[in-house]
Image 1 (tube, rainbow, N blue to C red):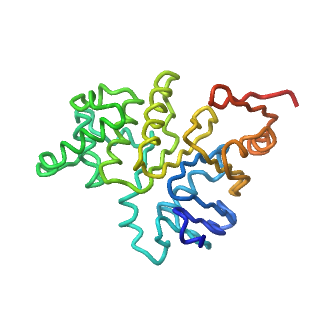
Image 2 (spheres, rainbow, N blue to C red):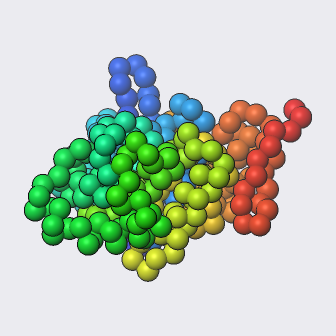
Image 3 (cartoon, rainbow, N blue to C red):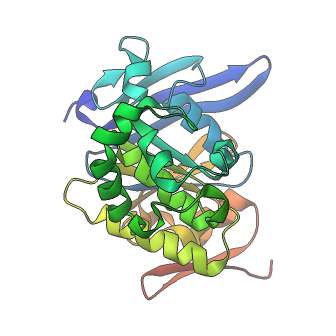
Length: 265
């Protein structure tokens, strides 16, 4: 299969700013229909890889292809409209009195806190369907100020689904969630991944516990390099994670979920 046939193809991606190398010769290939986790310590390059992938960070060299489009040769701003991004950091941009349904309706215009009367009437059914897919239709009329962080993240995914994205990026979506909210949120993501026409999903995380079974593949980054990648079961090993986090680590699966603990040196 030609590289251009991959859903995501990153080849020799390098990002330098002054004397600092942020990413170095990263190769990463995602086939259509695969769901990936990106794992690594703080400063490993996870956020920079996302920014390069969505054209918010210009590569110094290398190739980035998404859904048959090549960075520098295609209309990347237009493609970006079909990439859903969910991050705990954008929650504060939503007006506190805005109801969840309005937030979802703002998806097609890509502007939080904004919607049109036309969008309100023509897309409301679709918005409720997107909320239903995330198990959050009961939140439709609830103001933002009365939503938990986990509920807000589900609403954000529903908002992203309004544009029928080809790629959904979850950037540390469980940050700030208590254990119960985290499990409820991950359950919603798992349900989405099981849908026949789900977008490719990429989860960026520090925590192996968040890599639920639907994430069949994992990319581990360290110091701007791709340390290891491939099927999750092959990548999440004691040696790999000990190297990635510079600490003695033991990892195991229990009932399909990963558990990590530090061991003695």
